[in-house]
Length: 108
Image (cartoon, rainbow, N blue to C red; front, top):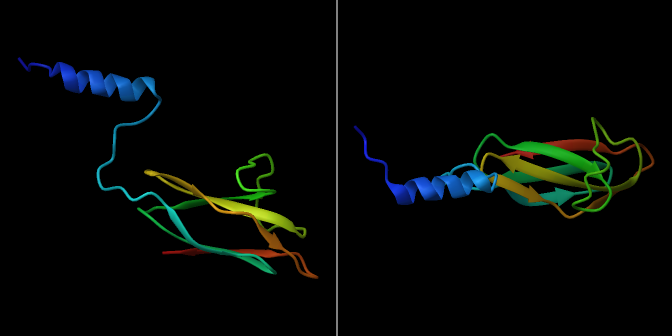
């Protein structure tokens, strides 16, 4: 028979109640190292792989206007970078050009 450690079990239940997974040791959260606007939106980020990128129109943190594909109009855009350890939000940058802005993601 295996004796259960009551303290470890209590900690595990606390994580589950908070809708959090168990802690991941040595798991670097994403860090956005650069973000550029203009005619091409580009972002560079580091963190535990794989990283995923979600682009949005509007101000940072406003997830009401996700951008699927290439942005089609001049405006403000920001990106959320995620991995299994957490996420990072960029500031919003302005994409402005005579032609619709293109989107480019650089992965490190």
